[in-house]
Amino acid sequence: MSSTESPVSGAPGRRRKPAESPTEERPSRSRGSRRRRSGGRAGKRGPLVPVLIGVLALAVVALGVVLVMEFTGSGGSEAATAAPTRYEVYETGEAVELLDDREADPRPLNENEVFADSAELSSGDLVFALESQSLTDNCAEAVWGPRALAALESAECSQVARGGYVADGYIGVAAIFKLRDTEASQTLAEGLAPVEGEEAGSEGGFLVPPSTEAPFDALGAGYSSATATVNGHYLVVLWTQSEDSTSAEETENLETPLIALNGFDMPVYYRLTEREAFLENTGAATEGTTTDGTTTDGTTTDGTTTDGTTTDGTGGVVDGTADQGGIG
Figure (tube, rainbow, N blue to C red):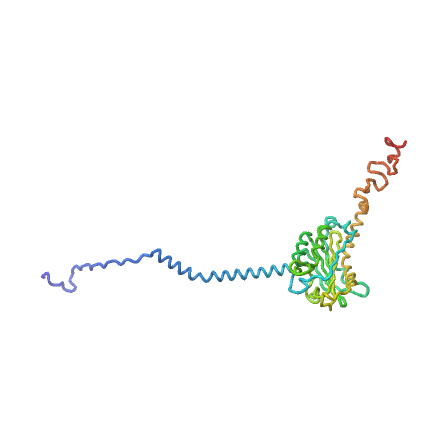
């Protein structure tokens, strides 16, 4: 077979290895391409930023609403941010002396003690009926306004009892605050004083009724009168108004409904008599006598001085013998 002849089909022969084509190199990723992809993803996340800002803004607004409601009292009624037209402060001397400090009367008020005998309060023909009530240790629920809240915090209030009353033609609220001491009661009484002028809404504050539903939502819409009485570490606040009063300029005499509501302070009176009886039974005098049985002038209650001598000026001792310089 000549070198020019091709091998016969099927005959054994040696095939030539086909020429290898050059290998194609895959383009490597450059940092620039990664940055672009990264940039593309950042572009997709971009709209989330204003969304998150919007959500945060809504949360701040919601928090502000909650704080305002907490600060001004529950609900949005007039009574939750109202104050009396007339306000006077009184002080009970005997209670100031015997119930001066909460440490002398630590027992908490209870529902039965406060409301069992105050379902009806009356003066003459006027009879108030209890419509709503509250006894809580969260005293901040009972007042509104920065000035009143600051005074309440300073007074270290531990309890407040409130009653909402309705009579023929009148509405009223009564409250008992249990505070640190007499000075704290005086502080809160001053903090509840109405603020006049443009600052009344932002700087003032007063009592919040136990219910802000009708008819108590009308309190403060007309001419109303209130009193605060310092009874040692208790402060009793009374507030009343005619049901048909719509103008604070139209004054009227509200003495009778205030006298009727004053019966709400009976728990304080009972505490006062209990304290007085306790001091008498333990030998502590209530007037001019110290707790060790001696009077404030240094003599004992049996007429002898604390050094064992009588008070008649003779200088004789109790057993009848004379001391030096005395009469023999």
